[in-house]
Length: 367
Ligand SMILES: [Zn+2]
Ligand SMILES: [Zn+2]
Image 1 (cartoon, protein in one colour):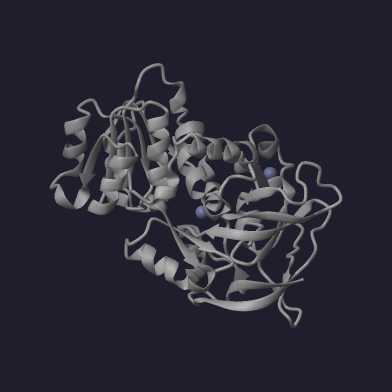
Image 2 (image 1 turned 30 degrees about the horizontal axis):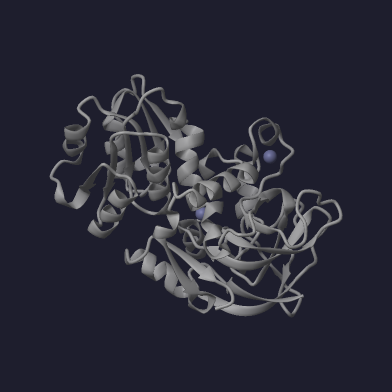
C-alpha cells in the first residue's frame, strides 16, 4: 500500500515528503497506522550522518499507533490494538534470551543497519528502489511495519499523541534509574543528580522522585528547563552557566558526594563533574554521547562504578505499559516536556530543539 513518509535522501539533507510503497507484514510482523512519533537526538544524529546510516532512509523510532494487520505467526498482538513501537533486537542470541532485547549482540546492526537482520526492508520508492529503515520501524511515516516482538500494547484509552516517547526517551531515562541503578530497591533515600535537562534527563529525574531519592539535583544551562525540573521533582537546581565551579556547587549540596548520577547532555565537562562528585561507592551513568577520549579521568575510580547504558536496559513489552500506568497515576507527568508538531513541520523539530525552545518534539501524522 502507499504511504506518506519523511525521507532523508542523503546525510545532512532535510526531510522531504515522498509517497512510498510499504509491504504487507510478514509472518512475525505487524502493520501499524502511525498516529504520532517522537523525534529524538538519535534521529538527528542519523540524519546528519554522525551515526553512519545508509540513505535514503525513513527515520523515527518512537512510533505510536493502531495495528491494522498482523502476520500469521503473531499471537500477542491483534488488529485494533494500540501499540508503541520500540527498538529492535534478534531475540535469539544468548544475551537477548538471558537479559532481554536491550542486551542483543546485534543491537547496532538491527537498529542502525537500514535493514532487518535478514536484509529485508518493507519500504520501496514508486520506482521500486529499496528505502532503508531505522530501528526496524521507520515511524516518520503514516504507516510502519515492525516485528511484533518489538511492539508494546498499551491501554486503548491512553493518548496515542503522547505515547511515542515511551519507546525511547522516557523509557531510557526511567530505565537508567529503575533497571540499571535500581533505585527503587534502596532501603533509605539516596542522593541523585542528573546532568542535562532533555527528555532522558527529565525522565530520569521523575523516576528518581518515584523511587524516593533525596536530594534530587538537576544541572543544566537553561533557566526555563531548570524551573520545569523543579516542578517535576528536583529539590535543587544548578545553572552550570552561573557557577564558577560546578563541582563545588554539587558538593555544597552533597558534601559526601552523590550516590547516583546520570549524565545525559553529551557535555564532557558535565560527565567528568559527575564522575568526580560521585560518592565513595557512587554509581555514575554516562547516557550522553560525550566521547570518552575527551575525558580527563580521575587517577582512580576507587569503589565508584561507571556505566554506559543504552535504552535504559529496558524490556519494552513490559516496561512501556508499566510507564504508561505511572503516567495515568500522575506519577510520571512526562506530557509536560512534550511539544507537538504537525507532520508537515517535521523539519522544524530539530531546529526548535537545537535552539533550546522545546524538550521533546512529537509529530502528529494526520496534521
Ligand atoms: Zn539478540
Ligand atoms: Zn531515541
